[in-house]
Image 1 (tube, rainbow, N blue to C red):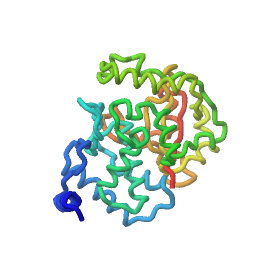
Image 2 (image 1 turned 30 degrees about the vertical axis):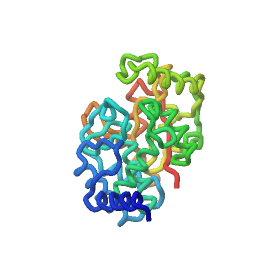
Image 3 (image 1 turned 120 degrees about the horizontal axis):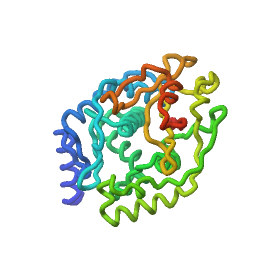
Image 4 (image 1 turned 120 degrees about the vertical axis):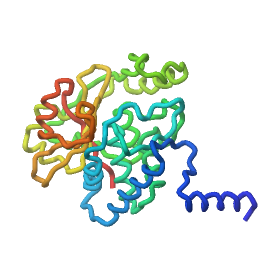
Amino acid sequence: MTRFTYIAVLFCLITNAFGMSAATDVRFGNETTDTTTITNLLVEASQKRFENPEARVAFFASKFTGTPYAAHTLEGDEEVLTIRVDSLDCTTFAETVLALAMTSGEGRSSWRDYVYNLRRLRYRGGEINGYPSRLHYICDWAVDNRHRGNIKDVTPDFPGCSYVLRTIDFMSSHRNSYPALADSANYARIRQVESGYKNHRFPYIKTAALASKAVQADFHNGDVVAFVSNLRDLDVTHMGVVVKDAPDAVPYVIHASSKNGKVERTTMPLADFVKRNRSWIGVRVFRLNE
């Protein structure tokens, strides 16, 4: 063993022993409480049996009920992997429970493994390379994570699935709403990402179809739903996790509600929840891979 290797191994042993973060590109809300919460959740899940990956997603989603809502927690002066479980928005809620479910499915219970999986989900190719490497658009998130085998887009499997054609360029069209896009290099790279989504065709389930018993029966407890916007230059504006009390039960949703300021289960079924929001035209459905 070389002197350099010896020092590197010693450093890893020290950081493991004292719970220090060896990753320099991670920003915690509170490292002690965040890592403790993540570890406790993973340990609890390790003592349970889940019939499929979606059931793990539903389990973790339920654990965040009541967690305060907070927007823009990923923004900062530089792009680093941000981890906080004390407050969530709709996207970080979905990413958090998916990363936990992935880690649990691997039979792991370390917060460090969770960090690895969260990075895999949130960034293009699982690698951080500045602000544009984050998968900002759900269409981009879906394509990238599906390609790498993290998730499945099961929307086409639902009866009566429809398709919509859109050019996705909301961020560049609303540049002033995104402080990071004041940087010309970031702006150019986001425009490059958007160029891959001109006339982008994607599947969705129309709002009216969600009331169908056949459609409702196809939802799994723990499916991730993305609510499709009626805007012409954007695909999705909200996310949540389906919960069903039984396989033949009506689906509800757990989501991070900006209106009510917390993660909560909807008081009405999914079909009614979507119907009451006129800015949505339906949903996409994603499922965690084995």
